[in-house]
Image (cartoon, rainbow, N blue to C red; front, side):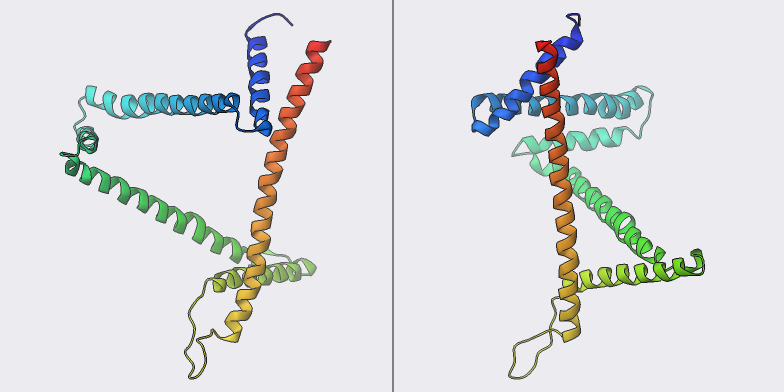
Length: 223
């Protein structure tokens, strides 16, 4: 292999990977340096993206083209910068309120349309026997639909905390709600276990990839 840019990046990647693995020895200065480099590169990348794809593309260019609509975000941005001054911080409240309101609307809209409706639609697919063929396939689809519907309802009932008042006894939920809550707890535990297993698998995959990179680089230089 000739000494070119590719070799330099391989050496840098090899050294940085070893420094990251040095965290096994403790929080040493080398690991802190790599963490600072990662944070700095991330911040620099985000800054470049904001400058070129937001400030220039969506603000400066429309203003140079004579767009009056671009004056609104320019004014709101200027008002938001007033938050840097304690005396003029009130002028930035409208911009901050707009940011919080739009962010909340996007989050709620995404949760309702993308998650809630998507989950309902996905649960109904399993009980849509009109799409299934007659025979064992239809029966299996019905069993799967009942299982998914039971899991969904039981999980929702797990977060049902209301209870009835009975004279001489502590408030207690109905036995059916307690039963569904117990079933929902099982489904939640299985879900969290699957998520945790996915996270562990992703981490092990990254570890194996880096270990293979280190081993391959060492064998290459030894040869």
